Length: 528
Ligand SMILES: *Cc1c(COP(=O)(O)O)cnc(C)c1O
Image: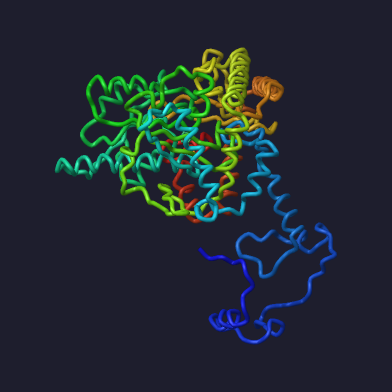
């Protein structure tokens, strides 16, 4: 650890200068070709030369610009982004109290990994892990030692969960003198894209239980039937991204016990982990089930923290092979570290701690119950407008509404056309197709987040009505025109993006099907 807390001596300065080959006094230091003409610091932002020039895009500018100009130009540029509160596509938090924001801003400069420098931040993480593990009913006997870590989000939590299951399986196989080169993982085809990433990055075969026209969650029996000696685990989702339904973790658990199969369950509770304990506490999905060994949750979804924070917890160190855990010594005590990232901000972890002690269980419950009521109210109104509701009600699923048009109404337009109409009013409500093997079905989804109040919900319902009336009034020719416009609009937005993104992103974009928003592996970008 370097401490920069005293003035350097002349000798040290000379030593530093010599080290990089600098000579002479600062005033006479000059590089050929650099123009040192003084700036006019009195110009206004919009009266300056910057307002009449392009915003730098590809090459870092040669010279500085005044901070107020840089601020204003970037702020203006960002106004073309959507409004986060009208973005009903995302689960990710768009509102926190001023006090939470203040704490988080104060911690912007803290690198969480510097345990020695910031032991309190490290301890706050441990308090959060402990609270979350207990919320998930981790065994609380004297000898119990659930453990976990903060992550950047559920994706990192899931990567770690998969690594732990893979390693544990491999260790067991090696001890039995058996090969361990063909691991597989069982999951629903409606998994979030990060499961496919985890499988591919860590060379694990994906074994899917496919959705059908009527079932959008995993079939427990089919899942357990897919198990063989190379299965490292089963993923169960507490709130799928497609319809928000909770998968039947207990049924999988019970089948494993009944058939005496030694395969663990990891629960992807990215969204449901901070909903179910408050809305539906009797539902058994967590560490109450002996086969559940690890759980991830996104702090930045219903954990109510700005992006990026997530959590992953294991019921016992037994399920977290020692080889994966690094011990970082701080203040004479060991702090275990099992993450993919090293440096990260401490703000999000502090924000999570604020939310948990500020709201307490009652605070979370009140918010989640309001969201559940609003989701039910929205579902009833959309049903009234002729939609078929595909999500659960009364707290039996996540507070979201997934719906589709009733084909009996014989509408001449589809869900994508409605989404396009709503977009003209500023709402982002994604239309997408169902998971692989049921992708003929189109649906729309509205995520009910903390800042989606009853009155905003009424405004959305009014705009849904208007969108349907507008589309009903269009003749076939006009509908076709609008469809083409919508496709062109999506493609243009994409090609604008391609112009300014990394080569990696460009490659990924070029390899996706141009006429839909689906990636090459069936995951809809809008659904995350
Ligand atoms: C959002 C989500 C993820 C990914 O979580 P991040 O926190 O965005 O990394 C994984 N699984 C499910 C079910 C999700 O809803």
